[in-house]
Amino acid sequence: MSYKITVLPGDGIGPEITKEAVKLLDAVGETYGHNFEFQYADIGGVAVDKQGTPLPEQTVQHCESCDAILLGAVGGPKWDDETPDRKPETGLLGIRKQLNLFANLRPAIVYDSLLDASSLKRDVLDGADLLIVRELTGGLYFGKPRERREGEHGLEVIDTLHYTEAEIERIIRKAFDLARLRNKQLTSVDKANVLENSRLWREVANRVAADYPDVELSHMLVDNAAMQLVNDPKQFDTIVTENMFGDILSDIASMITGSLGMLPSASLSADGPGLYEPVHGSAPDIAGQNIANPLATLASCAMLLRYSLHLKEEADAVEEAILKTLREGYRTGDIAAIGEATVSTSEMGDIVCQQILSASIKQ
Ligand code: NAD
Ligand code: IPM
Ligand code: MN
Image (tube, rainbow, N blue to C red):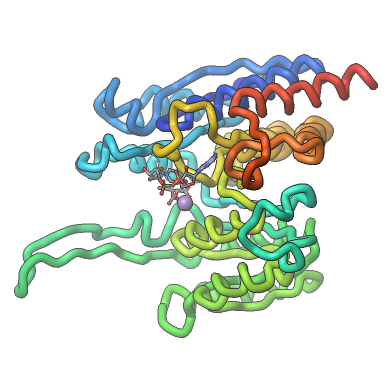
């Protein structure tokens, strides 16, 4: 089969890690007889520099006319002082909104060989495997008005937390569907003791639960959830939450895996192409040094193969290749113990590719 993949490398370490992802998909194609056709487009700071906007129209067109999108990361200090319409992050939020990518899946799995890479204790982590389902196209990120204005007592600022009932219901249903495929435990995270948004969120979750009698629904306040994630991550199976809470909780959850450089994500709409990207950002502090961990992006490729291309065997093979690479002791700096030997971004990519190619020789 032939598949068209739009690649948006973006800024900072984005180009370095997407390069490894393209290499990996090529290895999958060679092994399983698929042809991946890559079309590259600009997003974020690089698009601002070249085209004066973080989300050029042609980029949107490329994203609309493909089977799946692979994104590196956007942003960096270079664009700190840009106006909101020229911020790299505005490009990322724009493509999420324009493609209606409302469901953001962020799995955090503990690999046995990385148990000592985390700042958390082994016993707390061993066996943790959770999925955060983050609402991605509503809430504080998109609510209007958003403004800075002169008030009676000087400057004032407004951001708006807005959700429609329909937006809440579709992400809750998606999370129930996903929980059904896992351990059938869904924790809905909110701030219903304070926010009207969260009170409606809870009502909708309770109503929808009637359609999923096989899934156990519970509710947790977000501040407690942040604490529980590091105290006892094994209590969680599937978590569903609104946009901003999901952003923060997923970075916390990354520490279960040992590094932010390990966490992949899939952003899905009801029908069109999905977008796949690591949870981490453009890591300006290590950009251009070939030391970033590419595994979050490679694991995002596994999600791309699974959710957008429905290539289950290939997705399993990529996940297996990552597992094997870690078991054999290969480490980038972020997951290495003090004094342990490390490999570079491109070496790590080569090793994972080699696992795929050599598995095929054995077949
Ligand atoms: P960040 O995720 O880029 O980096 C946080 C820390 O984690 C840094 O020390 C970095 O070196 C490290 N890190 C991140 N990814 C790594 C990897 N693959 N391997 C090894 N170490 C890694 O977050 P930040 O520094 O707060 O943000 C930097 C820029 O990235 C900002 O402009 C922000 O808006 C942007 N950002 C973009 C995305 C995205 O494109 N999806 C996500 C988060 C942040
Ligand atoms: C993420 C990032 C983005 C977000 C930023 C860069 C807009 O932090 O994907 O987690 O907040 O959604
Ligand atoms: Mn984030």
